[in-house]
Length: 225
Length: 225
Image (cartoon, rainbow over all chains, first blue to last red; front, side):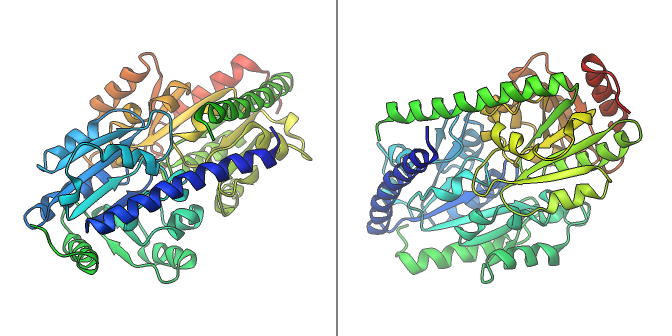
């Protein structure tokens, strides 16, 4: 296999994905559904944040979630406790979600009546970066326990996201997390990137996050519930 | 692009990689170099563990490290402080190391005189699983802050590793880490997998880890230094 041929193959896959993503984005916009995708490394706290978010938004909005994992439906079962509709996407050995997986997961239920659809990607700071899912916003999470330099080491995922969230901020002191150097790392990759600090455990930053989501939804749609 | 064609392309890439890996493994065995690769999600503590390991082994063994990252040579600079020879492999957008990258990184220096060569993979619990690097042992790390269910969610990387290390064990209590359920998760994926609990920060478990490495080297080689 020549490397020219390989690049061509990769390009074709991405092109197909972008086409499906574009169709999804049009459908989401027409139905006025705000679609928020979450990306991070494994264990950064996507599911925990999503759990708290669904609970908070449910009082005022119609919300649902799609969750991607290589194996298990642990996350879907966990999130379903919030009372929101949740569907698991099992990817097998695939390291990221693709637009076609999202499209297939939308079959057979009334997602058009949603205000918010959340998509939790496979835990991976590399591969999800290059796959558009048709989302309104992509949010990248990294936890204080992972270290301050993650934006510099995984620049593409930060460059393709709209907001960065530093999670598990309640552990900042115990792991000697340096806020200033983390902010500097984000700024070096994306100078104007908005940044939130959140602990889903203590609730710190959750109100600001909720306001952020409501503002995003307000820019796109009229409330349905 | 038909999916049949895609599967064929993937198979060819893996076949090429396996061939290079086999050549590397033969060369490492002939030179009696014990090659240890480390895989984990971003921020699980590969570099920190490696830093402490190089410091401890250096007194008695000839050691060096190759470190993979998408961007930056932060890790190589950090590890070089241990006094060991360290070379960075920058992968760009590639989510894993491949055997050919290791082969290329071995050009131009006397790796044959080593006792141990460590290879730190890109932070990713998915993609490195299917790429043999010719290593003697693959070690998978996951930190207490990532949650107990990682083996169940990323079974392939656990199935292809020889030892699992639970890192940042000093934080177990503060993050309410459930040791029993983590051990059970590992066992469900790989019933006979050896497991160490380590804190590179406090030193807990480091002696057992060092003994493990020395035993592995002893099975393969005579000491060179």
